[in-house]
Amino acid sequence: MRHTLFEWADVEINSEAIIINSKKELKVLSSAVINGGLTKAKTVVNLKVPLDFNHEPVEHFRARSVQLGVEPGAICLMTAAEVDKAIVKTETIGETGVAVIATAGTTNSSDVADGMSLRGGTINTIVIVNRGMTTGCMANAIMSAVEGKCKALASLDVRSKYSDAAATGTSSDAILIACPSEKEVLQYAGSATDLGYLVGKNVSDAIREAVIAREGLLPQRPLEERLAERGIMMDDLLSAAMELYNPFPNVPSGKRQEVLLRCLKEAMQDVDVCTLMMAALRADEDGSKGLLPGVAKEAFKGSNLGAPEIIGNLIATHASGGLFEFYKFNDGNSRLLSRLPPFTSEAIGALIVGASSRMNAELKGSA
Image: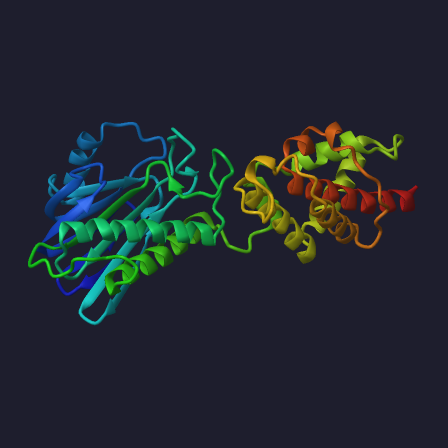
């Protein structure tokens, strides 16, 4: 598939690579693994590699460049994401035009403060501008592009695979800014400029669409997935429920788990339960950062808050489907609940209470 970016540049996308060819010499600033840094070129490649890629990059590209029909001196980014799912965005304001080509894989999503982590999964961003830029302007454009990437990930609530914090990217992202190597007419690319706006907006839109296309990571995805992204799995909920409450010792555990699993899944499809659970997760996230009014970060976990229990009671009532018989779990008796922060612990405990109430009603009815 071929797209025209500008009258002097186009991009070809197939399952093996993304190849950008320019009739004009390009000034390029990038973190590309091959020929990165500040340089000049007419060809840019985003090359598909295996998820377990461990070859020497230069030698690998030299061999692949022959097959792709590109010069070994081309600039090359590499990714394990499906390059044929790349998203292309173009937009112009006045004389300034921007083209963005993005590929995204979030199996390696991370928070920039996670520390060392590296495995397959990369977000590669290529930005082509139709007018000459100073080197400082190109650095400014990279800043705007990275802000756009962070905005895209936040809009989908992408979480780090290493800390469950909000992801800011992956640990192996690459970025490239290019423009014609001619008169440097553009000097700034912050968000107050047409160029900065175009870069930030189109990078954000392209990466958001690329993540959805490649990962199927929809913003309205089910609560079960949102919890799993934070390390709370369905098996954890079942185990916690079985640890904490067993009003039917004569009912086989397999039967109780079967009914409880169904009740949990039904409760997690209730829009009010989902809304309240996300509120609890957000409250814990803000509390851990010291963003709750009147509650210091250092005092958050030990603070005597009544709000978690209020949210918990609402969740339990909705999750039970009107069958709620209140009983208070001792959070310390559950390995799951004892490791969670206060709002989430109360909310998850309430979800279990509500689903258990529905289970109890069903098992009583069948007794």
